[in-house]
Image 1 (cartoon, rainbow, N blue to C red):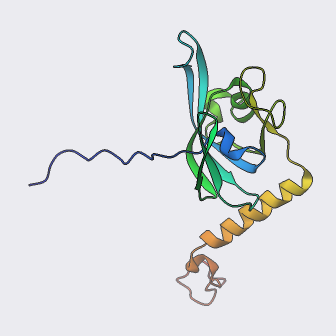
Image 2 (image 1 turned 120 degrees about the vertical axis):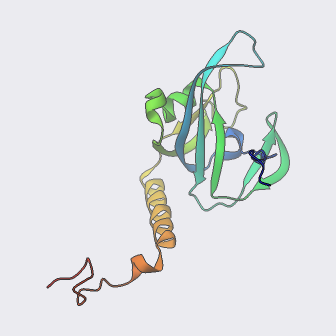
Image 3 (image 1 turned 60 degrees about the vertical axis):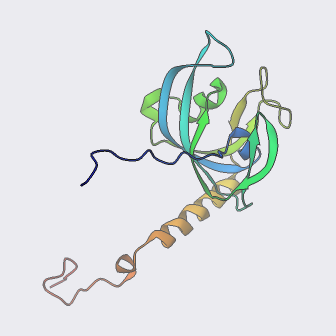
Amino acid sequence: MTDPWNAPATIASEFASADSFRGRLVLIRVTEFEEKVPNPLQPGKFADRVTATVSTVDGKGPVQIFSQKASTGKYLNGPDHEGVWFSQDRIVRAIAPQGVSSMGRLTLGVIETYKPGQPAGLGNPWGVVQPTEDQKQTARDFLAGRTVAEATPAQMTKPNTDDPFSPDFIG
């Protein structure tokens, strides 16, 4: 007999956060936008929240996991990190300026606080720093390498221009 239900999806126990990406060149793809999410640490306060896939494109290796803004000594391999939440207003506006219409939008930059190197918090929110021309080229190279790696063997073969039944036929 087949049961009519599914088992719950596995919930990841370790997540990357803004702290994990501090100083890293990243591509951020907005996957979800939620308006007015309650802040559990400040009852009665609400903030918009972005869920994103963050890809480290700088080639500097794994990202560190933080808990309550403290390093755990554990790392996550990448380069892609799905389900990363951002809720501080400054970073949300940087990566999702059109709100829900920003879904799928890619942002390239370096994650850093308003006052670089100082702890994030009130008066020092997270943001995204504009990339340099060299960093833009690094991202282009990363994406080009990914495109080549994801190409199927069929996509990499020469078109069959001699076969009259081929869509590539040049008769």
